[in-house]
Length: 104
Image 1 (cartoon, rainbow, N blue to C red):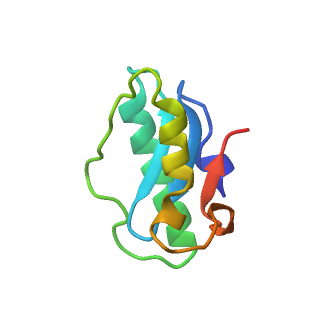
Image 2 (image 1 turned 120 degrees about the horizontal axis):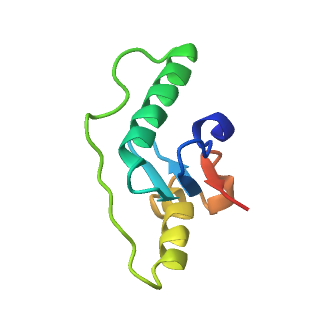
Image 3 (image 1 turned 30 degrees about the vertical axis):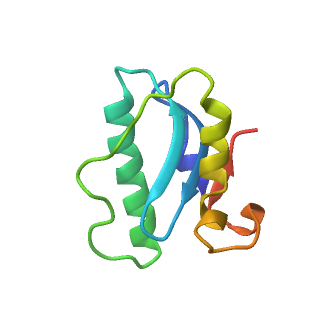
């Protein structure tokens, strides 16, 4: 599932992602000039994919929240994203959640 959605076609490297029941976490290294276009494309592809699996209606809110990482925050942010489902009590261990992607 993640391959088509997370393709690095616009200068954006996706380091990890965690799809939760009501939100999505992404850790990306964007080309600052292309992040808006990449998010719009991501939302469009994800919506079309959801529609092919029976979802109807809007999937995304119009905006998104982003934050630049400070030096030294990469590892803790990666761990936060990867462990989000476990922290929310959805699974016992992070690797039990099927909607996590980590770039190897």
